[in-house]
Length: 292
Ligand SMILES: Cc1cc2nc3c(=O)[nH]c(=O)nc-3n(C[C@H](O)[C@H](O)[C@H](O)COP(=O)(O)OP(=O)(O)OC[C@H]3O[C@@H](n4cnc5c(N)ncnc54)[C@H](O)[C@@H]3O)c2cc1C
Image (cartoon, rainbow, N blue to C red; front, top):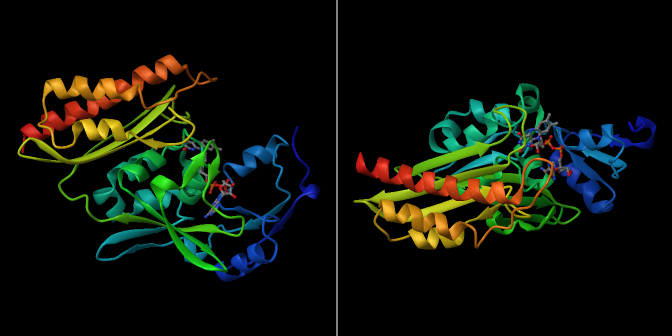
C-alpha cells in the first residue's frame, strides 16, 4: 500500500557541510536521499521504514568529476547520465560507462546515482563489479573528517557496509592505471533494458607477451555481496593465455560463489552463467593478446 507523505520529513540543507552537521547531531535519525530511485520504490510500496530524509541530491560537492595525475575522482551523487557523458569515464573506465548505460531506463539514469548504487548495496547492482575491477577507493565524509576505504572492503554482508550512521560516501576514486589493459564486461538479465541482473561481471587484465601480469574480476548476483573472484585471479596470474587456461579458470568459479534461487533466476543457472562468463573473459584475453 502506498505510504502517506504526512508520515515523512524531508530536509534539504543544500550543502555538504550542513548535511554532515545534521547527521552528526542526530546520528541514525536521518537517512540520506540522493536520486531516490531505490528509496522511492520502498516509499511507494509503504515499506520505507526511514521517516526522516535528508536530501543530498544536486549538492555541488557531490556532483563533479575531477581528474588528477593519478586518479579520477567521481562525486557520489553523479548520475548514470553524468557518467556516460564524461569522456574520461568512457575512454579509461569504459566498463563503468557500460554499466551506467544498462542500469534501468533513461529516466532512471537521469536520477540514479553511483553513490546510491553503492550504499544501497544490492548484490545485483550493475556498477559494482566494475568498481571492484578498477580497484576503486571510497572517500567517506562526516563532520569528524574524511576516511578512505578500499571498495573491496566496503561490503560486510548482505546489505551491510562500512558506513557509520553519520557518514556519507563523498567520492569514488578510480586509479588511472588501466592503460593497455584488456577489459570485458557483461550483464545477463531477462532482457536488455529495465532488468535486474541475473549475473554481471567486469574483468580487467594486463597481458604482456601472452602472459597475464595483472588481473581483477568483479561479479554480482552470485553471493550476498558483489565480490572479487580472487581464486580465479590467482589461477590466471603469471600464466600464458591458452585454451587450457580457459577451462582451468572456469573450474575455479563454483568454489567461490554462493548463488541463490530467487524470483529472477536459480542458483544452478547463475553458477553456470558465471563460469561461462569467466571462460568468455579468458577467451577474450587469448584473442586480444594474439592481436597485439
Ligand atoms: C525502474 C528502476 C530500474 C532500476 N534498474 C537498475 C539496474 O538495472 N541496475 C541497478 O544496479 N540498479 C537499478 N535500479 C536501482 C537504482 O536505480 C540504483 O541502485 C541507483 O543507483 C540508486 O541511486 P539513488 O541515488 O537513486 O539512491 P537513493 O534511492 O537516493 O538511495 C539509495 C540508498 O543509498 C543511500 N545513499 C545514497 N547516496 C548516498 C551517499 N552518497 N552516501 C551514503 N548513502 C547514500 C540512501 O540513504 C539509501 O539507503 C533501478 C531502480 C528503478 C526504480
